Image 1 (tube, rainbow, N blue to C red):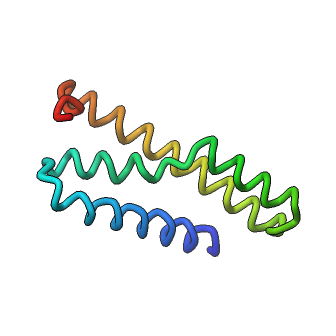
Image 2 (cartoon, one colour):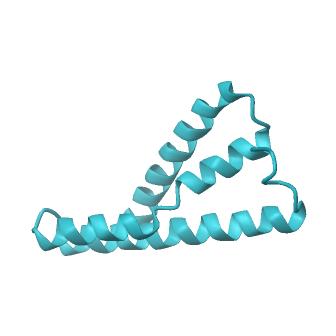
Image 3 (cartoon, rainbow, N blue to C red):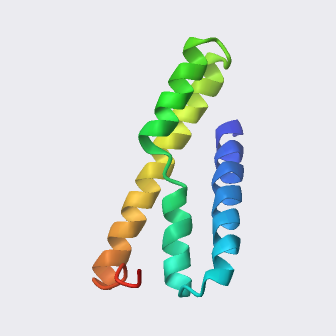
Length: 96
């Protein structure tokens, strides 16, 4: 339950923050959505940061596990979402 809550807050805040900042950019709604989803993909840097924090005993094993799971899940969501968008419209990424 804590993981789901942490993931929802982390994913939601970053998504909303990115989407709101892009409101004034003049980009289409779908492009703003793609940017917001992509910004949530923590990937390799998220794993490295969590590993360094854990190795210096800044965070506990439980929180390290939550960070790694969040990193993996957010990267998977972004990848699947962007592939789906490209399958629906091959020119979706041509705006920029």
